Image (cartoon, rainbow, N blue to C red; front, side, top):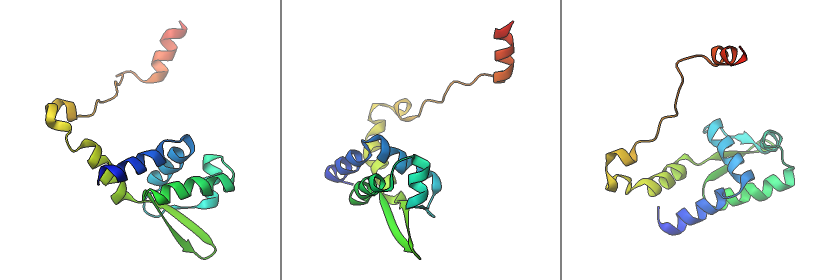
Length: 120
């Protein structure tokens, strides 16, 4: 991926509704989701959704296909992986430890035990 395409893709994701739609499409997988269900799950009107989906389509991050009377949108996983690859291609230039994602801190106690202890 070249810098121009990366900028277009990042620009398309730089809006809360488009980012929410894209994350939903990624979660849904290659089967995608009908536009009406996307609007319902993200909580935006269909007319606004069309506007945001067009940004994702123009950026190459999403695909659409017609199934009967519905339009199904899906994340383009090749484009997503290309973007992530572009962003991380020089990652290990500062050493391997810089490339390893930080794992979230986890507690060995279940949350309920922690809440009961605090209530005492």
